[in-house]
Length: 156
Image 1 (tube, rainbow, N blue to C red):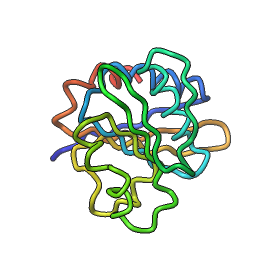
Image 2 (image 1 turned 180 degrees about the horizontal axis):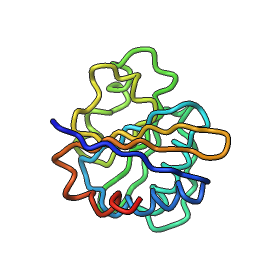
Image 3 (image 1 turned 135 degrees about the vertical axis):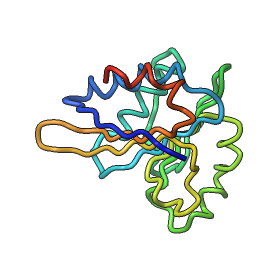
Image 4 (image 1 turned 60 degrees about the vertical axis):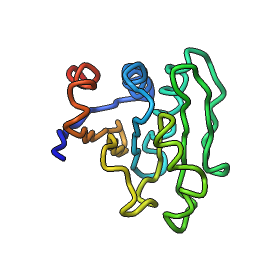
């Protein structure tokens, strides 16, 4: 599967939120976003903005660091937000219902490296990095998803 990769500057949290808001309406059941990056790079802020935009309301969106997964119900498809930071083996993610979520919901997965070889191959990879003055996002978009998501990233 050929992916298209590009980089986006995110000078502040507002820019991160705006990108998440642009992406939210294009997601559908079965879509998966893999969010990687160091602590404080913007992964959870991005997820929070995306979930709120998708739900269309100001929802309390805590980090799932301790609960490992948070679910949000929506008539157009539920959202499962995973934080796999504390996992020690990929099987633990499937014990949380990841396989079910990948088929029946929109999945946001922070710390996807914890899945090892079990990372979904058709996922959008978002790699966040933080610098002193701004954050950056490297996006890897699988070829099968490029036509649907082109409007989101073409001007970013």
